[in-house]
Length: 306
Ligand SMILES: [Fe+2]
Image (cartoon, rainbow, N blue to C red; front, side):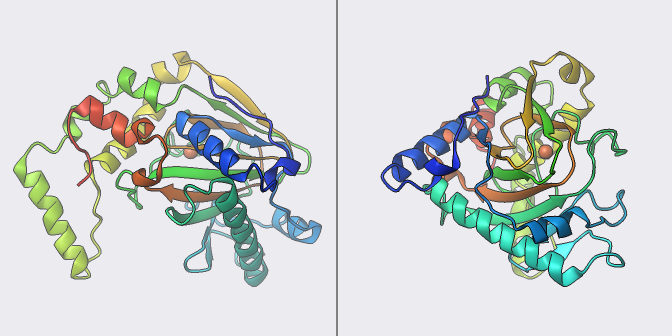
């Protein structure tokens, strides 16, 4: 069962408890818990919230969300004809910075070790959303990025429900520690094990190419399998119908944190959410044995990264 501790804003900044709490939070997250905050600790002014709730997304079929890239201070995926780009960028930048700053305190063992990935604003109503089966958010899946391989790093996401009245409804299932031993074989993990020497040579050549400036993607066997497993779960009708399911209701104004590469999740309904992603390297984890990389390597009997 996924645990959802009831944290309050008052407990957030107590310096006497900070180190213990940070360690406890990291350990629970690594075990597959969702850390839940009934009152989001990330403050957004009324004016900025009003602006965000009026933002329109560009073509829904091309952009799944509006994305913000902190490293480039760049926003993509919004309707440029109907949105003030400068204001949207400023709000997402400030909000992203606030989340990063708070998360650095709450999850201190990771801070300074993680890579700050993209943030997103999700203005669509998820219920009844028309997407391809692989892109659907309402089917249980673990996250994997097809264009941004993590090489074993874990995907940590901080969400906030910005909706004034509606909850965001999720279902989750048992984490990778339970799921992978049940399904990795039928998802053909075998096929991703780099047994053949030419496969290893292929990655060496890709890395040389990248160093020479060629736009090649260096995807480890782990990244390739996780991307495949994301699709495998969404396309697996028996899994979608029969797996254990836990239902979560995230009320307006709440925040939650979860390793989405570990916890299978699906969004059933909800509109207007903010999300910030962090990539946590395996050597920053407190319980690396619980990382999907290590779980899959135990099942494969070999390394799945370098
Ligand atoms: Fe997801």
